[in-house]
Each structure stands twice: as C-alpha cells, then as structure tokens.
Amino acid sequence: MRRPCRAVVLAGAALAIAHGVCAATEPAGSGALEQVLQLLAARRHGHVTFTEVHQLAMLDRPLESSGELLYDAPDRLEKRTLAPKPEDLLLERGVLTIRRGGRSRVLSLRDYPQAVPFVESIRATLAGDRAALERYFTLQFSGNVGDWTLELVPRDSTLTRSVQQVRIHGERDAIGSVEIRQSDGDASLLRIGAEVSP
Image 1 (cartoon, rainbow, N blue to C red):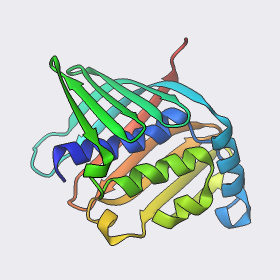
Image 2: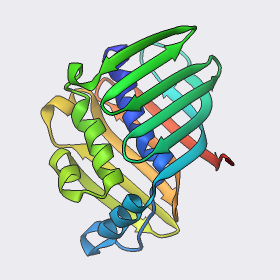
Image 3: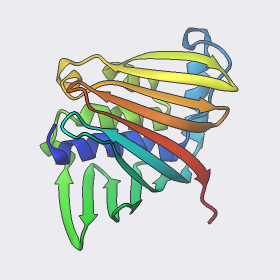
Image 4: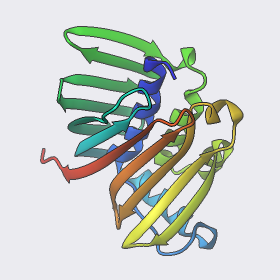
C-alpha cells in the first residue's frame, strides 16, 4: 500500500479508537452489537494517549511511536504523534492533512477509493449505523462487558487487497487495543492509554 493510502487507513482506524467503543454483555447475534452501536452514537468527543507498533516486512525492527488522539463528532480526528518524531494527521470531512517536518500534504479520500470503504465503515460505527457497517465488513463480536473483542473482516475484494482484518479489544467502555492486519503481511498494534484531561 502506498504511504498516503496507509495513512488514510490508519487514520480511519484511529478514528474508532479516539472515539471509544463500549461493550455489551452478549454475542452480536443476541443484541449486544446493537447496544454497542447505541453507546457509540451517544459519544461526541474523545481525547486519549496512544502507543503504536508497526511490523513492516521490509524492516528488521518494528517502528514504535506514541502521542495523542482527538475525536470530535461527526468526523474530525486528529492523531498527534509526539515521539520519535512529531507528525500530525488530521482527518476531517473526507480530507486528510499530513503535517511533518514543517511540511503539509493534503489528500482527498476520493483519490484513494480502496481506503474509502474502510474509513466510511469506521464512521458508520461511530454513527451507530449497523447497515452501513455490514455493507463493508463481516462483524464478529465476542466476550462480555468486562472483556470483549470486535473483529471486522472486509467483504469487498478491493478492500481485502489492503486490509485483511481489524481486531478491537476493550474492557467496559474503554478500548485497550486495535490491531490491523494488512494483506501484504504488515501489521500495526495501537494501544490506548489514559484519557487526556481538558
């Protein structure tokens, strides 16, 4: 996946993280997913810390970073990487702005159609729109309110060329981690830390 497209996919995943996912007590087929989606739709803001590890096939060692994620409904996400090098990703109204090293680059999601279903599916999750979410992914929800996992497996062959699976793990109303497995063998693991005080 080209670097800008990778940034779009990762920003979309971070959108779900900064927002926060709440868990239900039963499998998705028993109504738990509906409960989760209702809780998601109710949340309007999130600001948390993160650490992230990227496993890239072309590198001997993983890349590690840390920073903060900010979300404001309905579609504004900012991912501020503070270490090892400052970088800012801002996804808003279908436009991704990347700032690093004193330079900025602006990308429209329309130019990366393979990433649009993934990002829009995350937005559908945040909006509590199950029909839109299931248009793009097969959903697997397991666990209980104290320990749950939501797996998203792409339905569309275009998306499976980029993303093989997204696995979100949480406890109660807090996400603990989001793992993205890409079809080329690369993977990323985002661990969520504490909420940042206003």
